[in-house]
Image 1 (cartoon, one colour):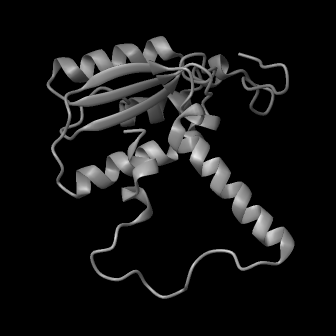
Image 2 (image 1 turned 30 degrees about the vertical axis):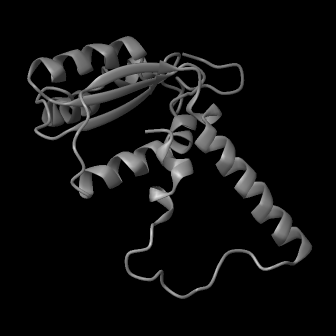
Length: 168
């Protein structure tokens, strides 16, 4: 599990496979039993198809076990994303999914989809353009952002805006 630029498998000179055999690590894993008990709430899982840290096949099996017990799972597999990069790239998707849950919106049926990259979605591209605009304002000394006053009651938050809703 080594990438060209970093030793992903290296932690103080030990490979991940070796770390998993250490009594301290085995004790923690036995205590928390990751994946042993299916959640009793809906789940969103985003996984890199070629992730080095947690293999996609392991996550596929976990999702199958969860669904077999009735857990609703939306599973998005990203072909280009990796373990760390997806933490950032999937943020708008996660934010919208959570907003829907807290707003009490109906839960869609559990799905599995494989996408080339969440980073290439229309919403992400709009977000990149917005970031470029903010950076341009900052570089030129122009004001960045809106007023500091709180949003009026009933106004839409950023996660409810159309560009973020597209990636749900």
